[in-house]
Length: 367
Ligand code: HEM
Figure (spheres, rainbow, N blue to C red):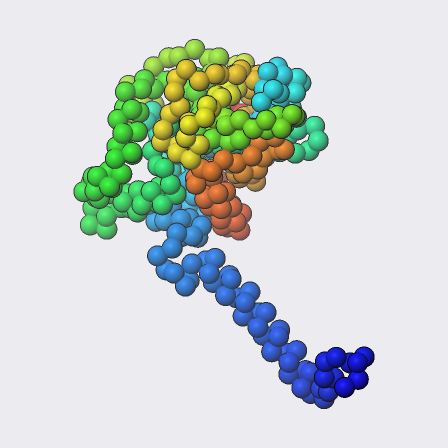
């Protein structure tokens, strides 16, 4: 054997054989891509909870409303800024916490997939925000007026949606399915018990908003701290209207528009500092009330627009769009939220849109 050729030389293949091998390779690559695609869409495992299936279920509960968000469908866009006082800097190196001002685009909304439903005091109030840092990085967050979330996992949220689908016989959700869900999920029953005791403020402007999921803040020196955040209103508490049925269908949004046009609305951004042992993967459990609360600055909202024209319409307030210095925790809701928000956006962005309930004339104060 020739020492310079330790392996038997490979005879060159005739050109036709090379073409066949090449085509087979391309076929294998396409099959692998197709297989991955089918796997991700859940076609191999029909019971698996995929972003598509989650989005379909939202549509089945509230009906198809092309062009609108699949959850928090009714809303208005807002604009303003965040004045940071620098107190958050010791927890996170994110530029948004340096002293100074950053622009904010936001959206107030009501929970559920009905873009034309009547406003009601008990409806979940939402506030999505996007902060733009001086280096162009974005921080997006979507908060609600509940201090704890009723569902621990995406699966539990989805199971509850399934139980909320209208019964074909009555056109309403079957109460027995709701009861069965609560029996399987005592954590949801506990959260609903807590929420029932809370006084409801009169509108969007005097509500507090909670980020609920925990995040990990990293300081300039590399220290990591679990943090939850919330917005506390500077607008004084007034109890919710006991008989809003007498009022306009969009009275919560009308009041918000009137208030913002009178004077800017303001909230304090509070960073709640977690201690070792505080759960970061369970938004149904509040952290102890004595946790340190760092007032990081003031959110000021001074512009309001209809969903038909607002910049926020083309934004998903995806909780995983984060600047350096804020990272996701191990909360299982976070990645599910990100994936389902993206699916909702892809669907609504490709559909023809009906006019929003709150029109551009309404947002200009034309009522
Ligand atoms: C697995 C859990 C969740 C799922 C599947 C889910 C699903 C959705 C979907 C599909 C949208 C519409 C997205 C779009 O088209 O832009 C949405 C919007 C929203 N969600 Fe969630 N959500 C979840 C948990 C939460 C939690 C924990 C909060 C509060 C901390 C929250 C607050 C909001 C708010 C405020 C909006 C409206 C944002 C906007 O105005 O665009 N969601 N959600």
